[in-house]
Length: 304
Image (cartoon, rainbow, N blue to C red):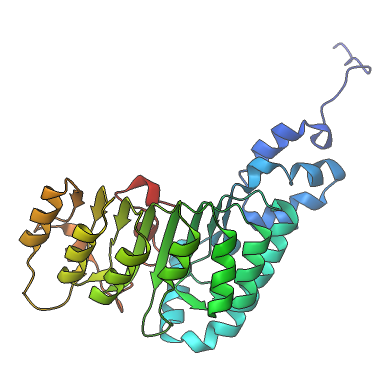
């Protein structure tokens, strides 16, 4: 057997091209990348800062990978909110600070984990560190002052897509006016929560450029949906699939469909025998929150 040529260069992991390493590193979760691979050698450390790795920051990737366990943990948080608030805020802050050491101002998509709790300090830090965000997913639990809210959205001038899980009984009113005053490029909105006429009025008044709106899995009032349909002048597509309705019968779904047809708005709703709605267990109005059905949407721009 011939001996191998000793002069032949043997490829080693630490000498791989950084572009190749970055492709490999995309297979890792965020924690393994920042806490593990980046510390192997200088070449891996530099590759772990590759811009292509940090276009999207998803804080759910820092948590338990097992989906069933994550959803069980989420249900506990819904029932015992105050018990988890402090630890969740600390974990969110820690995750953001670890990530921004590598991502710098590269990210354009920022997804706060479904179990995250967001306070003023973390929101201000995220906005200052990642000013180029175009798609933002806010968690259900946001404990924010008007000052931090105003600062954050004043930084996110490039924001095009906003996804909100808003729980009225737990939180203050969502500041749609602040968003509208700062984010003129915002055209896509997804809202999960209790959408009555008052919130619909705020959206119509302050988010005039919305073209794509999803209320998938939300609790909605028909007068509120009708107001959105007629009041948003640039609206092109509205998704109310799998919604739960509440209020009187003064406005029927036929009224809404007729209004959408007149404005040539593409209107997405469920069939009368939708298996998804029949099988869904409505848990405090947030059955889909944290699940794949929350991340998916009939409107592709609102998937994450």
